[in-house]
Amino acid sequence: MNIYLRQARTMIGQHKLFSTIYIVGTALSVMLTMSVIILTYIKVAPLYPYNQRNMMLEMTSLRIELPGKAEFADRNVQMGRLSYSLAERLKTLKGVSYIGTKTKPNKGQLSLPNNLQATTATYVYTDAGFWDVFKFKFLSGKAYGEADILRASSDIVISESLAKRMFGASEIAGRQILFNGMLRRVAGVVADVSAFVSEPYAEVWLPASPQMLQNKATKASEKLFGTWDVYLLTSDKKQAQQSIADFFKRLNTSQKEFQVDLRMLAESANFEMTGDEFNYATLILLGILVVGLLVIPSLNLSSLISSRMEKRLPEMGIRKAFGARRSTLLWQVMVENVLLTAIGSLIGLLLAYVLVVSNASALRSMLTQTGDDPIITIEMLFNSWIILFTILVCLTVNILAAVVPGCLSLRRNIVDSLNLKK
Image 1 (cartoon, rainbow, N blue to C red):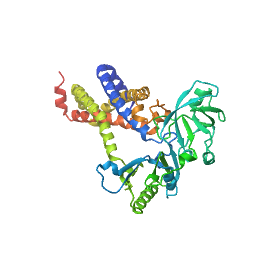
Image 2 (cartoon, rainbow, N blue to C red):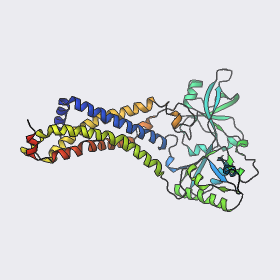
Image 3 (tube, rainbow, N blue to C red):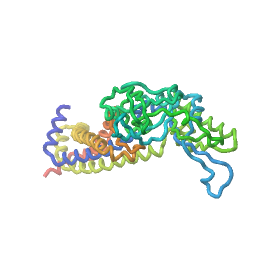
């Protein structure tokens, strides 16, 4: 192997233009491919504090159909977020461990008492179960609980960066702060959440008041709607999926006033009622994009290698004449290209990291719900799956670009190869 590596380094030094073009082409291919993979990973991976994402279900909207014909079809349809009373009913279903709810993110003003300078921050209202579903890291204090909500507590939880911005430190549990003009007590401080993890993201979390949790609607259909996004942490995801499906089917058959659209519910709840969890359309689209970013540059590099192999045929013919086997020659070509691919892939991966980090603000409208500038964490970038995928990308580029033209060139017989020597 050392001999092959020395030969490869010598060939790279002797053919600097070819080597530069190969490395740059590989780097661009890997950079674009890995940028897509990193962004996809950020949106679907179990990242802090969404650590148990693979065991969770989301219900962010509900659609019901009212009976009867109307002049316009949409007059027979109602859509909206879920009511807290409906979330409470889902707690008892089999397979569901915890249910947490939160409102839509909004902007609020915070300031210190006796200080007129205010800071704008993103806030949400939550129930006590929210802290059981999402696993936040508390740096100071603790979360508010069910008892705090029932007594209309003024406690709030804030992020580490907001605490440092307001107080200059993160160990500030028990301190007071003005939120939208009302005096509040900081119950706890949590490690920052990236806006890319949009489901639990906020800078300020407030306990829902008892009035917010009540539903004063009189019609059965209106009792289903409220202001809450519902997140379910399951002990058995498939069982929970089936329990929710059965619950709404029973609801539909028990009355004639309305019908819950189970198809819309499945999309909102991030699962199929059939139990099939894969979104194949998204998977196929991602696959096509990755193939396009990976295969097309590889074919261009393959053409470049084919041209170079034609020039090296006399060399290969001489080595064959002295007894070198085709596998030995192919192995040499592979080592040369693996070395070039490794250099280009490493540069491409570093460029992908730079591209994602430097354009985090530009991606906020596409990947966040609040429009806040997202932070990029270490676990988003340096993950074993991303490293493994990088290795697979490198191997794919090398195989597509080097093995095929190498095999075709080495099939030429010795006489034909030697006759090319002028």
